[in-house]
Image 1: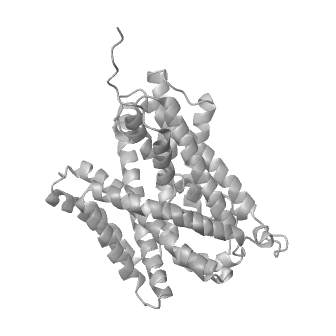
Image 2: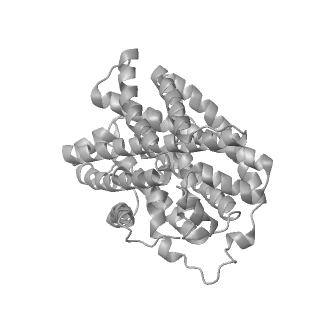
Image 3: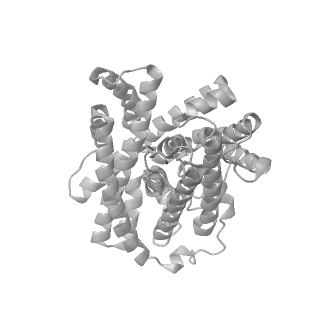
Length: 414
């Protein structure tokens, strides 16, 4: 007689794909056309595809190591056990830095886009104050509970998806081939500006903290999780390509210089698109989409930072404990947003610098250490040692590019 199985059914792959795609796609995509304007469309496309390939495989390397531990084992557990406390400290600091700098970036972005939105309605409202009030609203939601964040995120994400397809369907209909191919410039140079795009590409494919979550969700099912990572990252890549088509096919290359000089914030890009397209309905869709994109990214990043800090400092889940966590989560980036309201592009770039550690360098080291100890019996990323070397070079190379650009050692499109 066969015993009845009491195990729960395996969750649908769609849920995992949406977790990965939803984590990747956010307000950071607004930085891509601005920082990629020097390299322009085809070179930028090559940078995106290369980054997608490396970031997919670094995520698979985390999965390879994670499969040797029980479901629920986190990034912190893997790093501490396989690489030691030193690497675990470096990894933890890089995660905290990325989450803090992204929180600041979204306060900057929210202030600028709310300022632009109210300006469209004839209301003058300072960007600094708009960012501060938006941050306080998000802080209140995060303080309430994770469930409140989850419900608000679901509403915002649904609205973002709807406005995304409406906006980009309209944008693609206005694409000018001459603008996209940059036919107006004589002997343009693109390749010298390619390296500058890489840290921003890396920051736009961050999902690696979700890999342990997926193993907790699906159990030790590498085939399912691999498909989630593959399709989730491919969806993000496809949407980024559509976004570049829609922006670079409508805004001339030289116009991006002025956008970058104004700080490259979301409101400047939306204003430039509105001026070129001269369509009131499309302008409205762009404004609505950008608000929802910032809101969804803001909620996701701040919840991650909130939970990380609560665990780090040992604050409990009582209202007082959550208030303490909320204060150390939101106060530093809110002060940054008040002092430097136009730092969106810089913040995304620095996030890319720190993310090289936990999204490229550490995963490669985890895979190497895991193979030495366990032999990777459940799943092994293809490519052997050369693939590990490629991901390491990719991570270190991204960090060097950002450092060189900080010291003005790389050419700037101007």
